[in-house]
Every structure is written in C-alpha cells, then in structure tokens.
Length: 264
Ligand SMILES: [Zn+2]
Image (cartoon, rainbow, N blue to C red; front, side, top):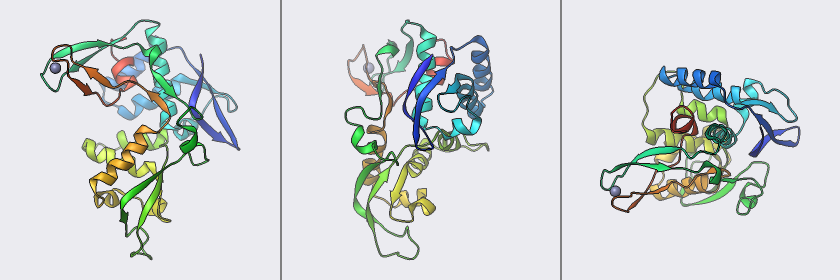
C-alpha cells in the first residue's frame, strides 16, 4: 500500500514522502512477537520498520540507516498504517483501568477515524515550515551556563524540532540493559527534541540543563514538542462507563497495543 508520510525524508533538497508499506504477513507477526516475548525492544521496533517499509519513492529499497534517519513521527505513522491494514475494517478493543474508581473495561477504537496531521495542514505549516522543522518556545527564566565562555548570559528563546527514529530507539530502547524511569526517558527525549537554546546547545545540550529549569518551563517546551508536532494524533481521552469521569491514556503504542496483541 502506498502511504504518504506526515513529514518525509530530506534528500538532496527534495522531501520524499511516498512509501510502500507491506501488507502485514504471518512472518512479520511471528518475528515481532518473538522480539516482544524475548524483550528485544530495539529489534522489535527496528525489524518491524525494516519489514514494513519496502520502498521509499526517490530512494528505492531503504537501508537500515535510511530508516534510522527517518523522523519518529513518520515511523510511528507506518506502525499506525500496519495496525490499520491489520484490522481490515474491524474495530479493535483495548483494556483500560479507570484511575478514579478502578473499573477495568474495554473500549473500541475506530482506527480509520484517527487524525493524521501533516506538514502544511492548518495549524502546522507555520511552525514546521522551515528546513529545521522547528517550533519556537519562550522560557520564563533564562537558562545560563550552556556556553562555557559566556556563563553570565542567559537564553530564554529556543526551538524544538522532531526526533529521528534512531534517536528515539537510543533513548527508549538502549542497547545496554539499564533500567531508567519514565521521567528520565521523557527528559532525555526533550533534550534531543530541543534543537536551539543558545548558540552552543547542540554541543552541550543535556538533561542537567533541564534539571535546573523551573517545572513550568519544562512543561512549556513539552507542550510545544508534543502538541504542535505533525503525525498520528489519536484521541487519548477516555471516559469510564461506570463513574463517567474522563482520563488521559497518554497515546498508544501501535506495535505493542495493537499489532502484537489480539486487540485487532
Ligand atoms: Zn471510573
């Protein structure tokens, strides 16, 4: 199936957005479940992306490094497309636990109605319409100490961009076995997402800088980073059928929530 990526790859001044996504087969499911059950998270996502993206228009068959250089939002769109092909018109169900009353219930999802925001769509063309794919943010308190030669000067303006699939794998599925909290993973993701915060940010950007920031400024950057990016935008607000209160499920993992499981 030919699919149009929400952002696309930059190659020689061209933006390549057309990809061929393979119809998921039993072999693809077996490999993905093998990786899932043996907890090979990096292989789980990488192997599935390699098996799914059979051609990039203008590049041909992609190499592993082509796939690692894709934007994470584009690879996530490919995973969503696989789940869509997999459910073939059916509406998969996911289990949720209500954080207010503890009720465990199933909710149906119509994947065909999930919104996909693309570059150039209303609301996204302004911040992401430049070569850096960046959106600006302004902090309440200047960040200092980033530039070693200019410690007294602070920076309040920066830009947040889109993370590559390779960066995302490095952060969320590190090669070495290490256990890190979700807060640390979120901070590391944000560090990779910020592409400008003072002139030396690219060389020195690190979690320690964020750790010194007021929490309201962290949340300002997160809001721009998560809210304004193109890509698959599912409705993550769920209403509990028992107490009728709502809660947020913070997005989906199209691979583990839908593709690996029998939800579809
Ligand atoms: Zn409830």
